[in-house]
Image (cartoon, rainbow, N blue to C red; front, side, top):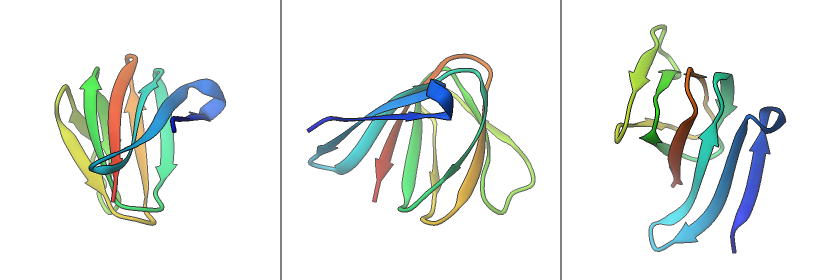
Length: 93
């Protein structure tokens, strides 16, 4: 079954699904700055565009582009800046 998710007044939208690797979402972010919280471990991969991210425990921002990924542990918050429309794949553990 495919689920739909919408956050930040529709500026972030994703489709959720389950594959042999587990639960995932694939989505798109409009330009903006967002703060997300996790309930499980997440691996975020940039499919198109780029994300500038401030990971938990870090004071510096790091930019991730096409094909690059980063991980966030469960029960953490992280910030994301997007300057152009950006697509991502998020896999949950």
